[in-house]
Image (cartoon, rainbow, N blue to C red; front, side, top):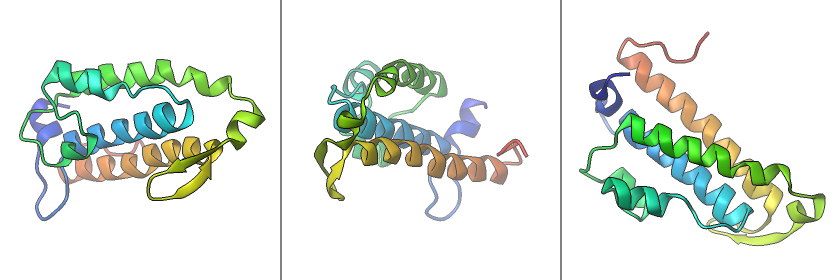
Amino acid sequence: MTPEQYAWQPQGSANPISRLHAHTLTSVDFWMNLMGLQKPMLWQAVAEKLGLPSNMQEVWTTEAPINLSDMQDYARGLRDASSGVEALEDADLERVVMAPVFGKRDVGFVIRLAGTQLAIHTGEISAAKGLQGLQGLPF
């Protein structure tokens, strides 16, 4: 994708791919790292380095440019951090946490929620690509 395609603003209230991508990654970071693995989110260091809002909710309204290569680097860091999920035992997955919006849930739920965020927003990103005449999903 070109930077223009990544930042393209669709008509109406739809979001540009750049914001959808950043939101997807910060959501995975929140649900997997912070809630599931009880590790600090990677986002704060990434945001500081890139001049983006440290509050992940402000990604939706920031005027700061969000660059694809920067988000790809962030995604690689998340992939590396996700290796901790493989080490979780059944007892770890059953541990109860207080999940914002969802209340008391087990770690298995919040890890699944991280995966669900990826699936849901991949569809939105594919649709935004399709609106630009680009290949969305590979089928």
